[in-house]
Image (cartoon, rainbow, N blue to C red; front, side, top):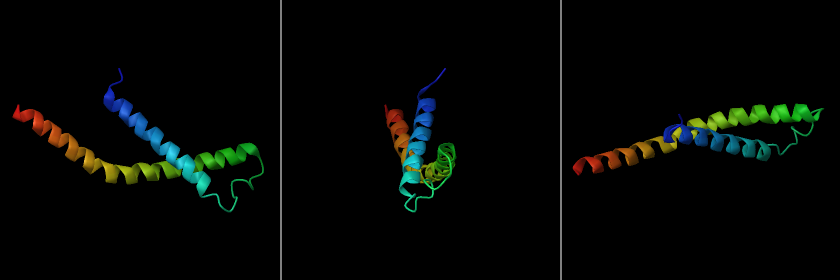
Length: 83
C-alpha cells in the first residue's frame, strides 16, 4: 500500500532526476555529449551525468529543505497537542 510519505519520496526523487537531466543539458556547453560517437552513447553518458547530478541535488535539497520540514511538522504536531 502506498501512503503519502511514499508518494512524497518518489516525487522528490523524480524532481531530483528532472533537475539532474536539466543540469546535464545546461552543463554541456562544450558539446561533450554531442561529440560521442553514437546516439546510444550520448544517451548513456547523459543518463550517467543525470544520475550523479540528481544524487547531488538530493543531498543538497535534503540539507536545505529537511530542517524546514522538520520545523513545520514539529509545529503542526505541537499545535495539535494543545487541543
